[in-house]
Amino acid sequence: MKRRNFIIKTGITGAALSATPSISSKPILKELHMNYKYPVAVATWNFQNATKMAGSMLEKGATALDSVEKGVMVEEANLKNITVGDGGAPDRDGNVTLDACIMSPDGNAGSVVYLKEIAHPVSVARKVMEETPHVMLAGEGALQFAIQQGFKKKNLLTEESEKAWQEWLEHKEYKPIINIENHDTIGMLCLDDNGDISGACTTSGLSYKINGRVGDSPIIGAGLFLDNEIGGAVGTGMGEAIMKSVGSFLIVELMRQGKSPQEACEEAVMRTVKAAPNYKDFQVAYVALNKEGEIGSYCIHKGFSYAKFYRGESTDNLSASYLDE
Ligand code: ASP
Image (cartoon, rainbow, N blue to C red; front, side, top):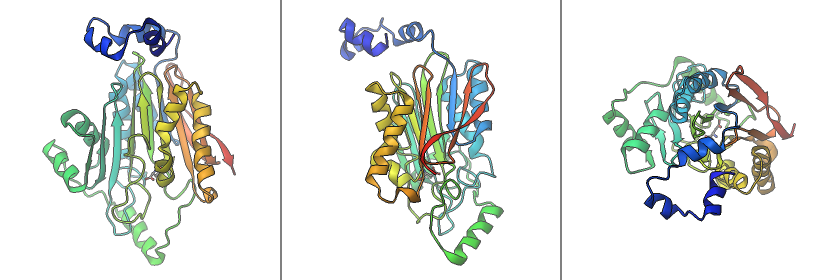
């Protein structure tokens, strides 16, 4: 029996729960989820180092929140990854602008958009969540806040990303290339030993986007959503399509209605496919994790994969099922 059912069946309402401090959700979750497979870490794409980092933390008893933050930071620091963090491709005017968000098991969320010169936007998002009454900070204000919080400014445009941008300027052709040009956002979900789930998503967004463009990745409900009673979902690919269907929120709600993570991801992708006659021109991919530790993933086009870690198993990369070649 899940906690939700327990609450319904015993007639304990949210108000009653909060008015009864002696009733804690933790022992119930622990007891009810005894047979589930914890801990789990799962991330979009072949980000095995990031997933290993999160997995090894979870194995040592770290919280899902700490593990998901440190996990995605591996890719934010990876200069070879041109779509996340330091070394991320700039917009068409040469600005590297980063988007990130994080969610904790209590449903709290933090996000930064259009953040420049800070290599770890996910950690700034966590500070927004923990140190402010807000959910999202943008642009100059987000940068100011980061500096106040002790983050150091850094030029994120590397020699390589500047050179690639200069080459792009020769043709200035803006055309997403499925699975290649601009889809390496890392979205990660972790389920810890307590059965608590957290998630994070971080990106430099679409390469050579219009200055000011923000995608789905830092938008709670679009690039990431979770509910600690149900599970979570993360998205990658064409952010505009993910935002229009509020994809990650949709997946969590579908799981709430009883769908498996796989079924929920499939339905979310199909929503986009039905709504967008040009779906053959872009990728949308999701990964979902439920509270039982089950993972599902689906995408429009072949080529998307996800990295997963379960206790006692080595980190693995799996191809997601897809609709179309
Ligand atoms: N979803 C990201 C965005 O639209 C891009 C990606 O997943 O690579 O900004």
